Amino acid sequence: MRYIGRFAPSPTGPLHAGSLVAALASWLDARAHNGQWLVRIEDTDTPRCVEGADQHILQQLAACRLVADGEPTWQSQRTHLYEKALTHLINKGWAYPCSCSRKEIEEVYASQGQGIARHSAAVYPGTCRDGLNGKPARAWRLNVQAVINDLHLPQTLQWHDRRMGPQQQNIAREVGDFVLKRADGLWAYQLAVVVDDADQGVTHVVRGEDLHDNTARQILLQTTLGLPTPIYMHTPLVLGEDGEKLSKQNGALALDVSDPLAALNRAAGGLGLKPHETSLNDALQDWTQEWLSNQTLF
Ligand code: GLU
Image 1: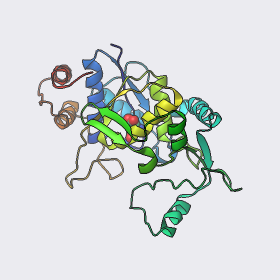
Image 2 (image 1 turned 180 degrees about the vertical axis):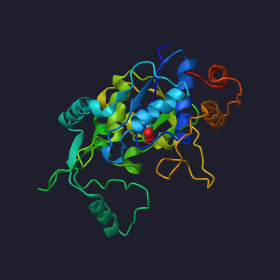
Image 3 (image 1 turned 30 degrees about the horizontal axis):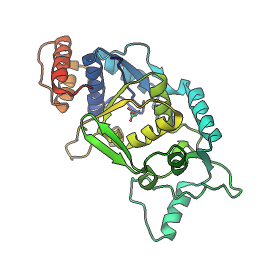
Image 4 (image 1 turned 30 degrees about the vertical axis):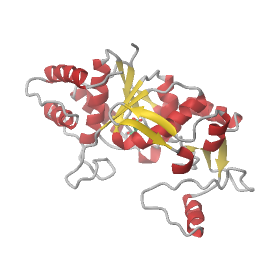
Protein backbone atom coordinates (compact mmCIF):
# COMPACT_ATOMS: atom_id res chain seq x y z
CA MET A 1 0.00 0.00 0.00
CA ARG A 2 1.18 3.51 -0.83
CA TYR A 3 1.83 5.54 2.32
CA ILE A 4 2.93 9.17 2.53
CA GLY A 5 2.93 10.78 5.95
CA ARG A 6 4.14 14.15 7.11
CA PHE A 7 5.10 16.32 10.04
CA ALA A 8 4.05 19.92 9.55
CA PRO A 9 5.46 22.21 12.24
CA SER A 10 4.78 25.94 12.33
CA PRO A 11 8.08 27.79 12.83
CA THR A 12 6.76 29.89 15.70
CA GLY A 13 9.57 28.63 17.91
CA PRO A 14 11.68 25.51 18.43
CA LEU A 15 10.12 22.09 18.96
CA HIS A 16 8.89 21.41 22.48
CA ALA A 17 8.12 18.14 24.23
CA GLY A 18 4.59 18.07 22.83
CA SER A 19 5.57 18.62 19.22
CA LEU A 20 8.19 15.86 19.43
CA VAL A 21 5.42 13.39 20.34
CA ALA A 22 3.59 14.26 17.10
CA ALA A 23 6.83 14.15 15.10
CA LEU A 24 7.82 10.76 16.52
CA ALA A 25 4.32 9.29 16.07
CA SER A 26 4.12 10.37 12.42
CA TRP A 27 7.67 9.10 11.77
CA LEU A 28 6.97 5.70 13.43
CA ASP A 29 3.70 5.32 11.56
CA ALA A 30 5.42 5.98 8.23
CA ARG A 31 8.22 3.52 9.06
CA ALA A 32 5.75 0.88 10.26
CA HIS A 33 3.94 1.18 6.92
CA ASN A 34 7.20 1.18 4.92
CA GLY A 35 6.07 4.58 3.77
CA GLN A 36 7.57 7.98 3.15
CA TRP A 37 7.76 10.70 5.79
CA LEU A 38 7.78 14.35 4.71
CA VAL A 39 8.48 17.54 6.64
CA ARG A 40 6.57 20.67 5.71
CA ILE A 41 7.30 23.99 7.38
CA GLU A 42 3.98 25.78 7.81
CA ASP A 43 5.10 29.38 7.69
CA THR A 44 1.99 31.08 6.29
CA ASP A 45 1.21 32.97 9.52
CA THR A 46 4.22 35.24 9.10
CA PRO A 47 3.56 37.52 12.11
CA ARG A 48 3.80 34.45 14.39
CA CYS A 49 6.89 32.97 12.68
CA VAL A 50 10.23 33.38 14.41
CA GLU A 51 13.30 33.91 12.25
CA GLY A 52 15.52 30.84 12.18
CA ALA A 53 12.95 28.62 13.94
CA ASP A 54 12.56 26.51 10.79
CA GLN A 55 16.26 25.62 10.73
CA HIS A 56 16.24 25.09 14.49
CA ILE A 57 13.33 22.62 14.16
CA LEU A 58 15.08 20.74 11.33
CA GLN A 59 18.24 20.50 13.45
CA GLN A 60 16.26 19.21 16.44
CA LEU A 61 14.61 16.56 14.24
CA ALA A 62 17.98 15.58 12.75
CA ALA A 63 19.49 15.25 16.25
CA CYS A 64 16.68 12.78 17.01
CA ARG A 65 17.38 10.98 13.68
CA LEU A 66 13.95 11.95 12.38
CA VAL A 67 15.03 12.84 8.86
CA ALA A 68 12.56 13.44 6.06
CA ASP A 69 12.43 11.33 2.91
CA GLY A 70 13.01 14.16 0.47
CA GLU A 71 13.68 17.86 0.90
CA PRO A 72 11.52 19.75 3.39
CA THR A 73 9.01 22.19 1.89
CA TRP A 74 7.97 25.67 3.00
CA GLN A 75 4.39 26.83 2.61
CA SER A 76 5.56 30.37 1.89
CA GLN A 77 6.89 29.06 -1.43
CA ARG A 78 3.63 27.44 -2.40
CA THR A 79 1.16 30.33 -2.29
CA HIS A 80 0.38 30.01 -6.03
CA LEU A 81 -1.31 26.69 -5.21
CA TYR A 82 -3.49 28.29 -2.53
CA GLU A 83 -4.41 31.11 -4.92
CA LYS A 84 -5.47 28.58 -7.54
CA ALA A 85 -7.66 26.70 -5.05
CA LEU A 86 -9.32 29.91 -3.85
CA THR A 87 -9.98 31.04 -7.43
CA HIS A 88 -11.65 27.70 -8.10
CA LEU A 89 -13.89 28.10 -5.03
CA ILE A 90 -14.79 31.68 -6.02
CA ASN A 91 -15.63 30.60 -9.58
CA LYS A 92 -17.89 27.87 -8.22
CA GLY A 93 -19.67 30.44 -6.02
CA TRP A 94 -18.51 28.67 -2.85
CA ALA A 95 -16.27 31.43 -1.46
CA TYR A 96 -17.30 34.99 -0.71
CA PRO A 97 -15.52 38.15 0.42
CA CYS A 98 -16.11 39.34 3.96
CA SER A 99 -15.62 42.83 5.40
CA CYS A 100 -16.20 41.98 9.07
CA SER A 101 -13.64 42.64 11.75
CA ARG A 102 -13.63 40.49 14.89
CA LYS A 103 -15.10 43.47 16.75
CA GLU A 104 -18.02 43.67 14.32
CA ILE A 105 -18.69 39.94 14.74
CA GLU A 106 -18.65 40.38 18.52
CA GLU A 107 -21.10 43.26 18.17
CA VAL A 108 -23.56 41.04 16.28
CA TYR A 109 -23.47 38.58 19.18
CA ALA A 110 -23.68 41.35 21.79
CA SER A 111 -26.75 42.78 20.04
CA GLN A 112 -28.38 39.36 20.52
CA GLY A 113 -27.42 39.41 24.19
CA GLN A 114 -24.72 36.75 23.73
CA GLY A 115 -21.02 36.93 24.50
CA ILE A 116 -18.18 34.95 22.96
CA ALA A 117 -16.20 32.79 25.35
CA ARG A 118 -12.58 33.80 25.77
CA HIS A 119 -10.19 32.05 23.37
CA SER A 120 -13.01 30.63 21.31
CA ALA A 121 -13.69 31.69 17.77
CA ALA A 122 -17.25 32.83 17.21
CA VAL A 123 -19.40 31.03 14.69
CA TYR A 124 -19.49 33.55 11.86
CA PRO A 125 -23.00 35.04 11.79
CA GLY A 126 -23.01 35.23 7.97
CA THR A 127 -23.18 39.02 7.74
CA CYS A 128 -21.43 39.24 4.32
CA ARG A 129 -22.80 36.02 2.83
CA ASP A 130 -25.22 37.89 0.59
CA GLY A 131 -22.98 40.83 -0.25
CA LEU A 132 -20.68 43.44 1.22
CA ASN A 133 -23.16 46.35 1.15
CA GLY A 134 -20.48 48.58 -0.32
CA LYS A 135 -17.94 47.76 2.40
CA PRO A 136 -14.38 46.76 1.45
CA ALA A 137 -13.52 43.07 1.17
CA ARG A 138 -11.08 41.99 3.89
CA ALA A 139 -11.13 38.18 4.03
CA TRP A 140 -12.50 35.26 2.00
CA ARG A 141 -14.81 32.71 3.59
CA LEU A 142 -16.20 29.34 2.52
CA ASN A 143 -19.99 29.30 2.12
CA VAL A 144 -20.45 26.05 4.04
CA GLN A 145 -24.18 25.65 3.49
CA ALA A 146 -23.90 26.34 -0.26
CA VAL A 147 -21.29 23.59 -0.56
CA ILE A 148 -23.38 21.15 1.48
CA ASN A 149 -26.46 21.89 -0.66
CA ASP A 150 -24.71 21.86 -4.05
CA LEU A 151 -22.78 18.66 -3.38
CA HIS A 152 -25.66 16.96 -1.51
CA LEU A 153 -23.52 16.39 1.58
CA PRO A 154 -24.95 15.43 4.98
CA GLN A 155 -25.42 18.32 7.41
CA THR A 156 -23.25 16.55 9.97
CA LEU A 157 -19.89 15.43 8.68
CA GLN A 158 -18.73 12.08 10.04
CA TRP A 159 -15.16 10.86 10.01
CA HIS A 160 -13.02 8.26 11.69
CA ASP A 161 -9.93 8.79 13.80
CA ARG A 162 -7.63 5.78 14.13
CA ARG A 163 -7.06 6.42 17.85
CA MET A 164 -10.18 8.27 18.90
CA GLY A 165 -12.79 6.37 16.87
CA PRO A 166 -15.90 7.81 15.15
CA GLN A 167 -16.12 11.61 15.11
CA GLN A 168 -18.67 14.09 13.85
CA GLN A 169 -19.21 17.80 13.45
CA ASN A 170 -22.00 19.99 12.15
CA ILE A 171 -19.71 22.58 10.58
CA ALA A 172 -22.41 25.06 9.57
CA ARG A 173 -23.74 25.18 13.14
CA GLU A 174 -20.58 24.65 15.20
CA VAL A 175 -18.01 26.57 13.12
CA GLY A 176 -19.83 28.53 10.42
CA ASP A 177 -18.35 29.95 7.23
CA PHE A 178 -14.65 29.69 7.99
CA VAL A 179 -11.84 31.85 6.63
CA LEU A 180 -9.81 30.76 3.59
CA LYS A 181 -7.75 33.91 3.17
CA ARG A 182 -7.38 36.24 6.11
CA ALA A 183 -8.11 39.96 6.31
CA ASP A 184 -4.34 40.62 6.50
CA GLY A 185 -3.89 38.83 3.15
CA LEU A 186 -2.35 35.71 4.68
CA TRP A 187 -3.51 32.22 3.76
CA ALA A 188 -5.59 30.45 6.37
CA TYR A 189 -4.21 27.22 7.82
CA GLN A 190 -7.28 25.20 6.69
CA LEU A 191 -6.84 25.98 3.00
CA ALA A 192 -3.05 25.68 2.92
CA VAL A 193 -2.96 22.36 4.78
CA VAL A 194 -5.62 20.78 2.54
CA VAL A 195 -3.99 21.94 -0.69
CA ASP A 196 -0.54 20.80 0.44
CA ASP A 197 -1.59 17.42 1.81
CA ALA A 198 -3.23 16.65 -1.54
CA ASP A 199 -0.44 18.11 -3.67
CA GLN A 200 2.16 16.10 -1.75
CA GLY A 201 0.09 12.91 -2.00
CA VAL A 202 -0.27 12.58 1.78
CA THR A 203 -2.27 9.44 2.57
CA HIS A 204 -1.99 9.45 6.38
CA VAL A 205 -2.07 12.41 8.75
CA VAL A 206 -0.72 11.76 12.25
CA ARG A 207 -0.71 14.89 14.44
CA GLY A 208 -1.52 16.16 17.93
CA GLU A 209 -5.00 16.01 19.37
CA ASP A 210 -5.12 19.81 19.62
CA LEU A 211 -5.69 19.83 15.84
CA HIS A 212 -8.49 17.26 15.98
CA ASP A 213 -11.20 19.94 15.86
CA ASN A 214 -9.96 21.17 12.45
CA THR A 215 -10.37 17.83 10.73
CA ALA A 216 -14.03 18.09 9.72
CA ARG A 217 -13.37 21.48 8.07
CA GLN A 218 -10.39 20.01 6.23
CA ILE A 219 -12.42 17.03 5.00
CA LEU A 220 -15.18 19.37 3.80
CA LEU A 221 -12.61 21.47 1.92
CA GLN A 222 -11.10 18.34 0.36
CA THR A 223 -14.52 17.27 -0.85
CA THR A 224 -15.24 20.77 -2.13
CA LEU A 225 -11.98 20.88 -4.09
CA GLY A 226 -12.37 17.30 -5.37
CA LEU A 227 -9.31 16.13 -3.41
CA PRO A 228 -8.84 12.78 -1.64
CA THR A 229 -9.20 12.59 2.16
CA PRO A 230 -6.24 11.11 4.05
CA ILE A 231 -6.62 8.70 6.98
CA TYR A 232 -6.35 10.62 10.27
CA MET A 233 -4.91 9.84 13.66
CA HIS A 234 -4.55 12.35 16.49
CA THR A 235 -1.98 11.60 19.16
CA PRO A 236 -2.38 12.28 22.89
CA LEU A 237 -1.30 15.70 24.13
CA VAL A 238 1.53 16.19 26.57
CA LEU A 239 0.22 18.06 29.59
CA GLY A 240 2.29 20.46 31.64
CA GLU A 241 2.52 20.27 35.42
CA ASP A 242 -0.54 22.54 35.64
CA GLY A 243 -2.58 20.03 33.61
CA GLU A 244 -2.74 22.42 30.64
CA LYS A 245 -1.56 21.21 27.25
CA LEU A 246 2.02 22.13 26.45
CA SER A 247 2.32 24.57 23.59
CA LYS A 248 4.66 27.23 22.34
CA GLN A 249 1.96 29.75 23.22
CA ASN A 250 1.98 28.94 26.92
CA GLY A 251 5.75 29.08 26.99
CA ALA A 252 6.60 25.38 26.82
CA LEU A 253 10.34 25.01 27.00
CA ALA A 254 12.29 24.37 23.82
CA LEU A 255 13.20 20.74 23.51
CA ASP A 256 16.70 19.97 24.75
CA VAL A 257 18.23 17.58 22.21
CA SER A 258 21.70 17.48 23.76
CA ASP A 259 20.58 14.01 24.91
CA PRO A 260 18.31 12.95 22.03
CA LEU A 261 17.61 9.49 23.46
CA ALA A 262 16.28 11.03 26.67
CA ALA A 263 14.09 13.45 24.67
CA LEU A 264 12.77 10.63 22.48
CA ASN A 265 12.16 8.42 25.52
CA ARG A 266 9.91 11.10 26.98
CA ALA A 267 8.06 11.45 23.68
CA ALA A 268 7.75 7.65 23.35
CA GLY A 269 6.34 7.54 26.90
CA GLY A 270 3.61 9.94 25.75
CA LEU A 271 2.68 7.37 23.11
CA GLY A 272 2.65 4.48 25.57
CA LEU A 273 5.87 2.98 24.19
CA LYS A 274 8.48 1.32 26.41
CA PRO A 275 11.62 3.26 27.40
CA HIS A 276 14.95 2.34 25.79
CA GLU A 277 18.39 2.88 27.24
CA THR A 278 20.52 1.44 24.42
CA SER A 279 21.12 3.49 21.26
CA LEU A 280 19.02 5.91 19.29
CA ASN A 281 18.91 3.59 16.28
CA ASP A 282 17.90 0.54 18.34
CA ALA A 283 15.27 2.56 20.15
CA LEU A 284 13.73 3.83 16.89
CA GLN A 285 13.77 0.36 15.41
CA ASP A 286 12.20 -1.27 18.47
CA TRP A 287 9.55 1.43 18.76
CA THR A 288 8.65 0.89 15.10
CA GLN A 289 8.05 -2.80 15.88
CA GLU A 290 6.12 -1.96 19.04
CA TRP A 291 4.05 0.60 17.10
CA LEU A 292 3.34 -2.01 14.45
CA SER A 293 2.05 -4.50 17.01
CA ASN A 294 0.00 -1.91 18.96
CA GLN A 295 -1.75 -0.10 16.16
CA THR A 296 -4.58 -0.79 13.83
CA LEU A 297 -2.61 0.30 10.82
CA PHE A 298 -5.16 0.59 8.07
N1 GLU B 1 1.29 23.58 11.42
C1 GLU B 1 0.35 23.03 12.38
C2 GLU B 1 0.87 23.26 13.77
O1 GLU B 1 2.08 23.25 13.98
C3 GLU B 1 0.11 21.56 12.20
C4 GLU B 1 -0.63 21.25 10.98
C5 GLU B 1 -1.04 19.80 10.80
O2 GLU B 1 -0.33 18.88 11.23
O3 GLU B 1 -2.08 19.61 10.17
O4 GLU B 1 0.07 23.42 14.67
